[in-house]
Image (tube, rainbow, N blue to C red):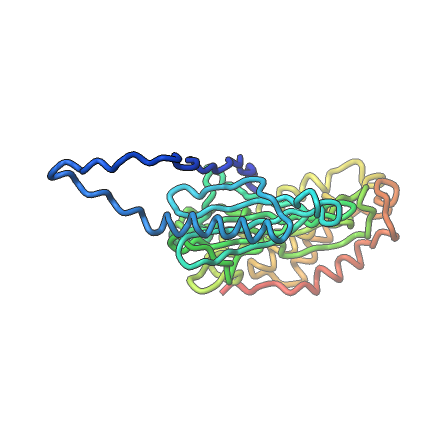
Length: 329
């Protein structure tokens, strides 16, 4: 299941205050025994200075602030920019800065569109490792004549300072603790079978007619690992679901006139999840063959605007058999 995530509602961060009076009144002595004025929080001071520094740097580079997204509970923020009116016709992209406190350090990136993503609970901070870590996930979508597929940028918040994550999952927003052990599992694209190249208008940003099998990874203390034995029961549950889906696919009355994307997806999941469960290649392929029995990819040519003839099941089957799959230790 791919959880849905809402895009953050961005709030502008304003600065209170204005110019001081032209004539300052005489200082009034503090009453005897009055508490001395508290010194400002040095982290807050450095954050505000860093934020202004980042804005000025971006302005000099031809950007203007669109939104400032503060990170609750931290002296940190994510700043989103649009091109200035002078550079917009040539640039047509967006910029993001992640700014924190302490020594000046900004994580910055540019793309066609920039979105800051919230967790299911509505938080800006993601714990991608299950150890209390804090990260902000930013979607960067490349755009030209058309916009493509968003790519995630993960910036980690250590204390009140941002840094680009040295290790991050393939899909940080595809997160769920499925076995309820406190360590979240994250989905990634484990296998892909491309039926045919396709026009963008017909098939969307992927520009191909394809099916994919989703895998699982999780933090093992040093890396996002895909070969852990703890994942075996989760794959076993996915195999059972694929077996159930296969029964519907086999009984379909529309095999001769329907592009078999659903059947292909079921066949691929049966093979991959059976292999991850320790089943032999021959037995796993037999499962896939039974799911595809009676199906042909030729109807795909009439349903979609393909740029080449659709590949037949035998060719896709050979590719499926050759897929490198992790060994669950």
